[in-house]
Amino acid sequence: MINGRHFIKMHGLGNDFVVLDRRAGGTKLDSGLARAVADRHVGVGCDQVIVIEPSETGVADAAMRIFNADGSEVGACGNATRCVAALLFREHGTDHVTIETAAGLLDAAAAQGGLITVDMGPARTEWQDIPVAEKLDTLHMGIAEGPLRDPVGVNMGNPHAVFFVDDVAKIPLDKIGPKLERHRLFPERANIGVAQVISPTRLRLRVWERGTGITLACGTGACAAAVAAHRRHLTGRKVEVQVDGGTLLIEWAEDGHVLMTGPAATSFTGDLDPALMPE
Image (cartoon, rainbow, N blue to C red; front, side):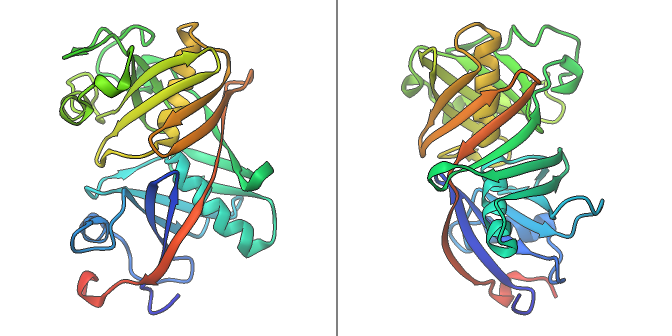
């Protein structure tokens, strides 16, 4: 920690993060600073800003907070969890850590080939857990916008609506995503996924992330898509999810928990310019 300004730039399949470690103190992050740091023109540039803090419960190795590029705080990010796990693995010389998040305690373990598996917790599929504004069947939500029809609702620490399409490349997600994110049924906004079934063991996925936009990968989105596909009887419980940045392995276990396996990488380190920091 250098004057509370040191950061690590990391990514999981291109979903990129600025990671700040506040366990020893340092500048407190708020929405304004998060926006400044995430800005790709005048800041460091990232999809999310991640803050590592001491565990409040004392049962985790560390706590993690997640700020979208627009400064909003969210409860879960699968790719960021792997990145923080990779840092804690090296720090503690271990292959298993527990990370405290607003979405609950997440266990992460080293997997073969340098990959990391995170237990993202149970998928929640009841309407009040997504959440949506009124009672409805989350397997067929009946929402429509342009070519997108009838999504599946899943909460993986944050709300997702997954639309199944014949070809994800033909969907203008940059135009439709912002509208659906703020649909009246989503009081907390929602991540909008478009998924294409390649085979019973493989999906192609693109995601419009609330507060960020289209990213090269969305870990919770991949989990949500896998759960949605199995609920629709389109795939088995274990699938490869191909995102723009690569492939994630997702398993919806029999106990309801969703296991996500993928890489984590460090791009560079640096120090935030004092001009970005509050007085």
